[in-house]
Amino acid sequence: MKNPISVIMLALIGLGTGDIRAQDTNSLSEYLALGVRGRQIADKVQTFARSADYFTLREAAGILHSTTFTNREMERAGLMLNLEFLNQGLQGIDPNWNINKAKRPVKNVIPVLPDGTRLYPGVDPSAITDPEARKRYEVAVTENEKIRKAFNQQIYSRKVAEGSLYAVTIMLNGLVNARDTQALTLATNSILAIIKDQKTQMQLFEVIKKATEQADLWRNERVAPR
Image (cartoon, rainbow, N blue to C red):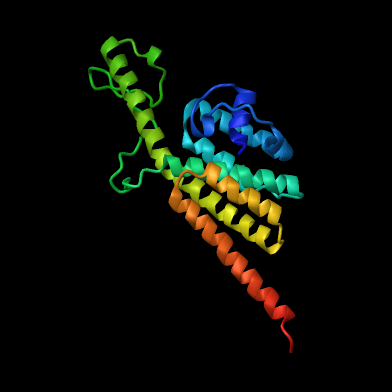
């Protein structure tokens, strides 16, 4: 199964390994199908590939989730990309993480000189003449950035997964109601190929099953003799 987000990465920056950042040699059809929105998503994913900052992944998913699909090609691209975002969101979640116990980043690290003087938050380290104070400040900035990324990962990976799961659920229901067996087969194969979490796989298959049962019930009621 093609990995459209990974294709974008190869085409735009040609780097990265694993999951959403893996290199791939497939076509750009899914990306191109979304036009301007596809390029906006690609820009955000490119930033994510370089920074591993899940806030930018959330922005990319937000663009996708607000996109209106006007033809089957766009719908197919949207489903593939939503599955990719869902998988990446799930991969970023630490099930043992607790927001109430998590270490939180500060907005700006405040440098402190040896005499206790507090400089302006976010000041350039080169502006600090004392070498020890500058070193402490640089270490503190680096540590705060690690904390920020770790915190963002747990917050935004969950948001990406939740939003993408909702989008995929809506799209799967639409495919069932449209009786598009070819698209449903593709969706089923895509779920198996893209989603690594087996529990989520089963959840999506249950969506298809329940939607199919409901659609069959509705059709039987329509054709039943009166």
